[in-house]
Length: 144
Image (tube, rainbow, N blue to C red; front, side, top):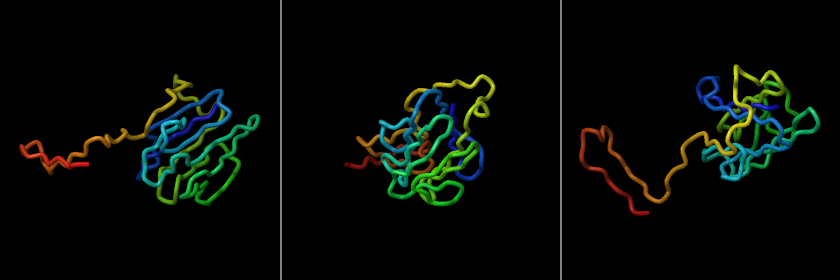
């Protein structure tokens, strides 16, 4: 079992978690075919892959902006329980928990395949809303 905790950008507290039980590989990136989808400009479409080797895991960087384990840029590296990875130098930080230490009080062990960390932006129509728009009637539409 492996649990990935997306950490708050300013505090080291989890804001979203994914737990996987039987997967041999877990893909993380912006594209919708990843197991973990993160909508961030510095995250590549297919940024990183976690691969199981028996009871051990390794991380493989696929992203153009790099992947950092414990602050060091890597191409491939073994993963230990509690490891902290960062996607790109200033991107999202993820804590990795391995084995039974990742089970929390009744936590669901198989999440939905795609759980985005942020809502997907609607590219079909961009809207600028002026500050305090609840007090104003004017909303500007941008042509795209």
